Amino acid sequence: MRLTFKHLFRPWITVQYPEEKLTMSKRIRGTQVIWVKETCIACLACARACPVKAINMEVSRGEDRKLKVDHMSIDFGLCVFCGLCVESCPTKTSIYMGYGYETTTYRCTNVEKAEGQSRSECRCRELILTGDELAPSATRVLSGYDRPDAAEKLAEQTLLINKKGYFER
Image 1 (cartoon, rainbow, N blue to C red):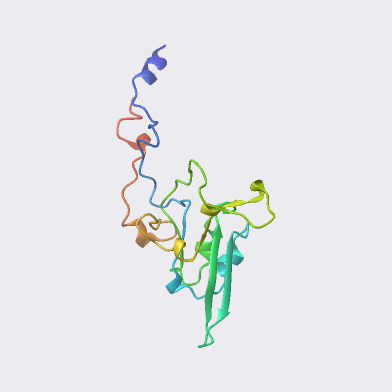
Image 2 (cartoon, rainbow, N blue to C red):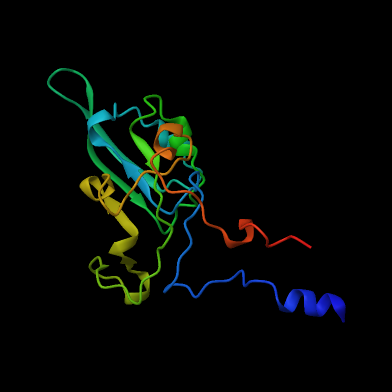
């Protein structure tokens, strides 16, 4: 009985999500992949490293005989957010894991439907991002995963279980 009362008066761990949110770890492998076109050397290392082939990249030789990216897309319906694409990048400045972790929507508003496909065969356009949609922005912030310099700029983690006094007897 004593143990029951001890747990009864401890502070709550859970929060009322989505109204209340915790700050995640700086090194989170969020559900965003951020691609910086300007620093990409079109080596296809990220596409080759992807275990589920979620990264589709089309490259060609430019007038200066250097490789350039013609088309880049990531299918987030396939992506398992393992971070192998980030680790395989030779420039270490072209592809990052994002800090965001929310991917739910109430309904898909933009369905990509090819001619002759039924509705169940269609892919939600919001799951496949291309080119500029993959660039860093105000809503697509870099995570500290494999990037210590980016981690310094993020807020401290606020998991309730780490608060002082929670495990004290």
